[in-house]
Length: 127
Image (tube, rainbow, N blue to C red):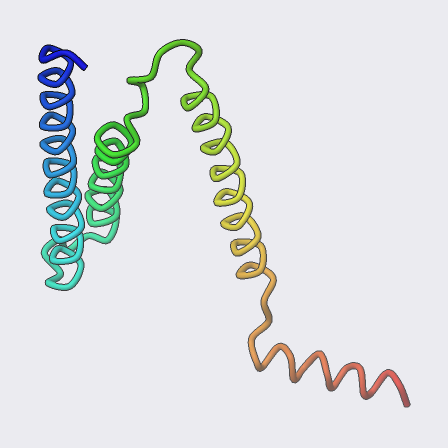
């Protein structure tokens, strides 16, 4: 390997190391900020807290995708981007479906008083 080849490999490793450290520090900052905002009740409105945490999560996701997984930096064809797109669709379907199911269960649940009334009607109807 020529001297020029060694220099380019060395520069790539140094740039990669810098990207990993930057990504780690930014991810750590986002995680700690979300934790501290939640634990210390900094924001009084729950929707504001949810919005800030969602924003921090988005920043952390983009950081990890670009600095750790190097998504978008590969050469043609962009298989990583295609796989990531399908994974995002599947995760969205799973999360939206779970929320929909939980909302339906919450809407259809009976209180203990309603359960007792229903049971009494069942007992009276059976005699």
